[in-house]
Image: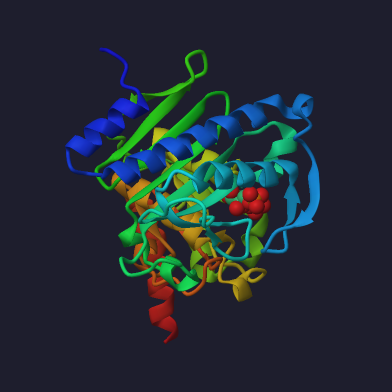
Length: 338
Ligand code: AFP
């Protein structure tokens, strides 16, 4: 079969009526920016990109040089094409308007420019996550409130993994598709169409060091997985934790599994660890489009009404049966309490 490039795929999606020309351009621009991030990431120490930037982001987290570089690459690439009304980044407190000298488009872009940044200096996969919303029709100067749309309204979501290969995984709400960067020709080529996550799995991903801080239903669910053959599940489960959400989710999108970043006593006041707008919503869209499920343990992630640009939420996502069982334990415990 002849290879299908990202550009060809986007043209086909346009012809199928799934996207308009502006959204197609937006994805091309984001993909091009991510190729530049892949190059910067790949240079490592030789490019002077490792280590701390010496600044903190809006979340109060120490920024790495590559966080700052990736954010700048995405902002710069998306400023002038006329496809955006504004963008918002995990690294910046407020939305970034489009400079007055450029035309404006109808889309809002949200991104986590470099997810898993604690892994940069140790040469483990990192990634970029993005989500696309429509700017309300009558709005010319988008403010925070215009970004606060539930995940169900996303027009597109994707992530890029900078690993042994650079991969782009993308959805427009018509399946989830994977593209691999052909480094020799510089193009993303379709490598898997209509990815399906198996409903059942024998593999889970969670940061076990937080176990003692979890809520009782999470303790119960993971306890049963760890008990393996001798426990109520009657079979053994394997565990993986990369600490780059992009890499952990990509493993699930490739061979199944379930990912958790639950609420725990340390992060209860913040509402969770992962960001709804930059991480949870786009990943939920991608996973649901691949036949998986995504929940906070209490609600479907994509149905949450956002209350803040940098809001954090608990995240359970991946193989449907496991997400549903863990959520069932949470609902049961809530019911018993009250
Ligand atoms: P950073 O990109 O801020 O380092 O965070 C990565 C992340 O948000 C997500 O990609 C990981 O799943 C999670 O944090 C890792 O958290 P732990 O530090 O608890 O392992």
